[in-house]
Picture 1 (cartoon, helix red, strand yellow):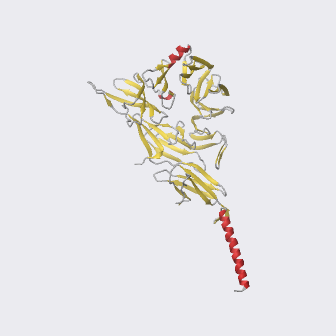
Picture 2: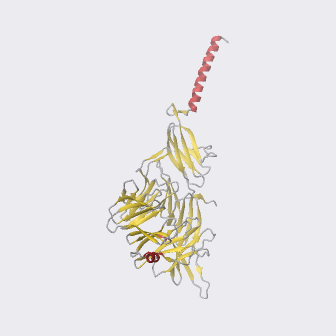
Picture 3: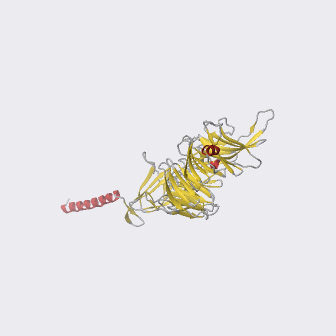
Length: 500
């Protein structure tokens, strides 16, 4: 071969090598050729973390067979994506699908850390069933029952339920029902009765909303009864279930309190100790030490979570009190209208207190921060991570406000940011949070909606229909809610598929 020819072949080979090497290096650095733009561009990525195993991932309508979570990671990483708007869909048989149009940017990974799919047929468990009872006596009579209300205990095996029993007389019965004993019937022998009262004609009674429970097993319960405009508090103890204690009388007689007792709650983690509002005076009552300590006067109402105590006085001042450090902190002053009443109060785990009055004005208080006032609020709920507040306004808008700055991956939120989740049918619908603080559970009639709060593109909202018009929404890892009717209580685990 001629020397000149060999030289040409050599230079061509070097040139080809340089081109191929450059392409390989560019490819390894994430460069790809964009056919539409006709240029090399740096790619980006997409990371998804979902609650279901073996999800089906579709990118721009194409099924990605190899897009599966790793052995040590429940997330799915899609790499080498061209910078563009991509349609991503997460599916699974018998589940609602999740879909968004996602912007992928060069050299960046777009993240979705909480993609939650709901089964179309969630797991439903009967907890309490009303059964018609016929007495076995010489003159048999039929006893009918109706569920009035209930409250699940935190031990995940019992509920406190109030029923209305009708025969020759009508009785209100408050009792504890164990739903893990395989017997869901109302006539279960394992039920523990707390209280029974004969009802007058057309008299209605519901003790559940104001119950105070001392621990997860319901070993001590305080409830109140109002007769002739006089409120009396009673203490029931599982250790001595037959002896119902008139706690109001015990406190008033032992410590010589002259003013009517307005409110009693358990002092946290100390037996025989209570926080009591007598007239306008707030007391710490300790039966073991036989002492009543007046902490503050002129109190309109008080609230407690864990070791944090809050009170509102008649001047409109709100104070926080640390039961461990034994000190108080002024949180702010509001203008109290005449005859105004507190419609709802709640305390977040970060010690932020929310007071919603019956004129639909909501106030938020927190130590070291200015008072926040929102008008035309009909319902609200703090997120489990204490960083968000969901509320419904007079425009039937369900909105989420961010209470702190949030930096979660590529999602940045500033304190005060406010986003619209959806429009509700009315302003009084129930709202609750799923435990990840990234999803809301909403009741509208017999329908339950499970909505994400990620407003990048459309907000995914799943709809479930049940045979109830009354639900209790709770926040836990199972997405558990409770359906209640006059004849049945069911536990509904929204995130678990009912495999038939």
